Length: 332
Image (cartoon, rainbow, N blue to C red; front, side):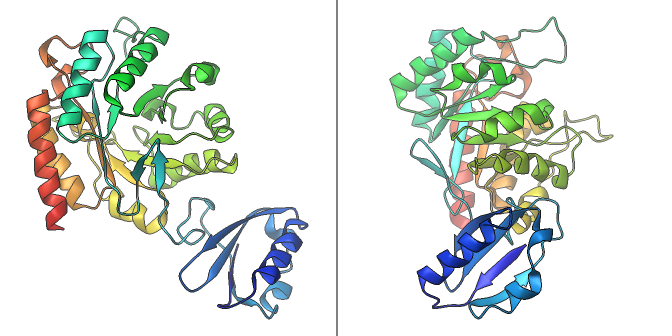
């Protein structure tokens, strides 16, 4: 439920209304717009007398939200959310470039790549320490050692780090991680999402392999219900009947999500296509579609990468993509 307060109402009256609403067993999220204050009511609103609320002198309109996602809803929070990742802003006109290898393989590898992608304009460094792989025999990552190497790369370059969590029990290891990624396979790991809702650290929530946008937003809602509203959505392609690409990149999700939610929306063209040469055109298309950022896999020796070498760019190729994306954003 949303209550829009009339323009010019004194703060004390709004505070009194918020205090009364909270006695009705609902939590109230306050959003200050240019002309109006919007109060979003989350929880069981059946206890709230909607007619009484509508007839209050300070209330302009009261609307029930029909969609199951409330906190993530654009109606609930009209202004774009800007997520601050250790000084790097994402959303609301702020564009971020996340780049780095699929997995951390060695100290020399991650630091070399970090320095190169930063020089090309990347603002966040990605690297997998815990790797969910389809085959149990594939490289699973360096785990805690990989996290330590990421932190070394952060010290060397000053770039905030992004890495994937697979188990809530690993949270103590992620204290120095700036942006925690929830991978596609864990998008509906609701117990993990609940735990991430209890911390106050930005979350990068990737879309599941075969999930609808509504299901994706409901996963974001799980995190927000716990009090953590610093969420970035990441479209990384969905599984369809097409076999020429690893996944099918759903770029229509970018404008649709911007209509439905206030949360920033990034695109991962590397996982979406699974093919090195397709990353550049898909990255450019994502920028043209209005994405708030890109997540691109970069490796200094893709042919010998321990994970996803076929979709990884060389640092030189990433530099070219970054320049092209910059031109696209300037054009739009």
